[in-house]
Image (cartoon, rainbow, N blue to C red):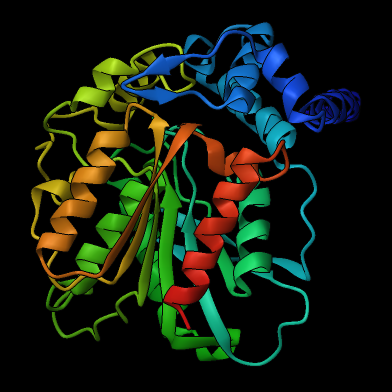
Amino acid sequence: MSDVDKVLVGAKALMVRGMFNLPSSVLRRLAGSPVEVDGRTLDPEMQLLLKVLRLEGPPVEKQPISRGRRTIRAQSVLGGGRQPIGAVTDRTIDGPGGPLALRFYTPRGLSGRSPALVYLHGGGWIYGDLASHDAVCRQLAEQAQVRVVAVDYRLAPEAPFPAAFDDCWAAWEWVAHHAAGLGIDPERIAIGGDSAGGNLAAVVAQHAARPGGATGPGAAAATAPAFQLLIYPVTDFVERSASRATFADGFFLTKGFMDLAEENYLVGDEDRADRRLSPLRHDPSGVAPAYVVTAGFDPLRDEGAAYAAAMREAGVPVEEVCEEGLIHGFANLVGLGRSGPRAMRRAASALQRGLT
C-alpha cells in the first residue's frame, strides 16, 4: 500500500469511526428497520457496518486473493483504530517451512514474569497477517494484562493444509520452551484465535493434550495451554450446521467466502475429519479450560456452540457466550462503535480470569 493510499484509508476510517460515535438513537435511524432472524435482532451498529461495507465495492471473496488481502488490511484499519500498547517487538524463528515471524506485545505497566497468550489470526487460512490483527492483539494485551505473541503462519493457496497447523504448532512449542527468557510464566500460557485462528487454536490445544503431542519420538512434550480463547471458531469440516445455511449471505461471512477458503486450503484428498481440521470430531478430554464466544448472526455460530458443548461433556471447564446481535468479525472492531469493543472487553476479562 502506497503512502497516499495509507492516508486515504486512514482518513476514511476516521470519518466512519466518527459516524459510529454518534448517539445510539441516531445510529438506529441510520441503520434502518430492525433485522430479525432466529428470534434475534441484529445490533444496529452491525447493520450500519454492513451498509458501509456494501458501499466499499465487491466483497473479498469476489476479488483476486492478492487484492482481497489488501482489502482485509484496510478493513482492519477501519475497525481497529490505533490501540495503545506498552511495547511491540518482532522476531523470526525457524519454522517448518522457513522463517516464521512472531510479534510480541507487552502491555503498559507490566514487568517481570507474566501470563501470555499465543494468538492465531483469522482469515479463512488464505487472508490475514500480523497487520490485520494488530489492534486485536493490542487490545487483548492491554485489557487482560498479559503478553501476547502473534503468529504469522503460512497462508493458502501458496501453502495449503497442513502448513498453517505446522507453523502454529511450531510457534506454540517455541514459545513454551523459551518462556522464561521471554518474561512469560510457562504455567500460564493460553492459546487463542478467531475464526480460522480459533480452529487452529482448538487443534493446538487438542494436540498438546495428547500424550507426546506432536514432538516426535524422544522429544520433550511441549507445555499444554493453560487456557483457550476461542472466538467464533471453525470446528467442523465434515457437516454443515444449520447456522451456515441461515446466515449464508448478507452478514459479512458468506458461503462464498467459506467455499473459497476451503477450496484453497484443502487442495488434495484430505480427510475432513482429520484432527488437524475438525476438532469437533475428536475427543477434547484433557484440553485446557476455555472461553468460547460466538456471534448470533454468524454462520459459524452453531459449530462453535457444539464444540463448547463437547468440551463441557468431556469435563472441561467452559464459559460459553453468544454475542446475540453481533456478526462474524466483531473481534476486529475493537476501535469502532460500542458493541464490538464491549464484546472484546468481555473476552479479555475471561482471558485474564483464566490465567490468574
